Image 1: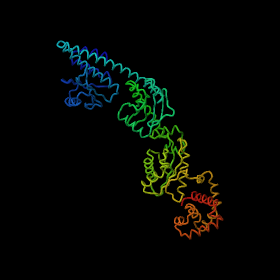
Image 2: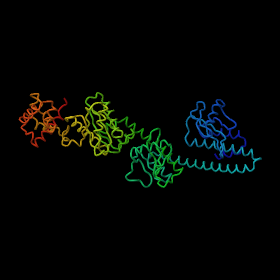
Image 3: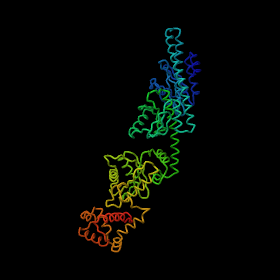
Image 4: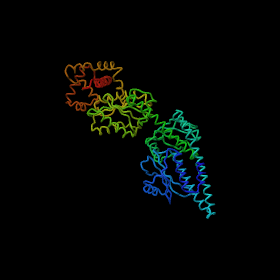
Length: 544
């Protein structure tokens, strides 16, 4: 640029300066000079369509901007400004949009050409305007100083670019990028994922534990930064988003409580964010490859997987598995398509919990992996979730079992087993429609399939064997009557209504149960054991 400036400022002819500018465009990159357009005259390489292009330039009114030139992939008009004057435009085209640094060089060339044109004009007027020439020389000196400062700044930016490119090539990932930006700026640097979880830290003062903002506040902050298109200050930090396309993959931030960050620090931060975006996009590609090779994430969560893999894969899906999660298992009796249940439950959970959830169909059930919600007024929102889903499906005949929350993804299989257990008990209860949590099961946690089934069956046989045999021989319903009697809290009227029999028929059956079993139905110990045995019989018996 300095050499070109010396040659240009030696020229006194406008045409020579413009021709030199046109011939220099190709030396700055894969560009094509379409022409130079002055305020009073036009010099073009391709005259065809000149009137249309001139009209576009007049609409720009001295500002830079995009123009349409034939079928070029990218065309831009760079104003040739110097010492407060707009002398015209340098129009450049390329097959693809250039980088910021390349556009900076083209803009500098246009400004240099404008300065040279002004200088030539001064020389032409030199004989008749000595006083004016002195003033103009002062302005030209300022322009040269700015040009020199621009070149120095360009060299500094080039050093930043080279340093961070080496960091990217080192393969050290986000940690290496954070360390590189820290070395360039002297400030502490943090790399976070899109949810605000710390990925890497470089420099002093790392907080323990690392603070996290609310989901809504985080989302609003990232949206504001994206709209601005530049790094933005938020409290004691300056943040830039790593956004390879439309989606934010991470955030790179400078810790700057004293507000020392200047243009160079901001350039290093923004350039680091570009490299971070490439790195995170590469990591996402690896995670998506893993998703294609392994089973569905939700299936793995309920059968067992390691924490690191689960969280990386969840980020590839745009989901955060860092907070505690729990498993919900559901069935809907009169809905023909499982996909309808999956959709309804997913939407209901998103609406009630205020966040996305993971769903999968598994063995005739719908499984949901959801973040542990906050208890509003001391109550969990499971009943509301059921009501919203039932309303969407237009059926109250659904059962939901809820496992306990777990801190780590690798612990979710336990929550899944608990959800299945709670679902079985809910489906076997007097009112199958609704929600049962594992914490509500009490002694019924002991009634289940797998280990201990023989003991439970033996317990049922010990207390209800005579009634079971009698029902089998006589096609009666004494065990079902006993179960319903205890489910209704020993209330005669409620039991009779539930069984749709007369009160006297109920009395006869209860007397028959006492006679056959030999147990006093009002005795505290017998009542407990008979109720547990009846509930176990109801849960363990094959579905009708």
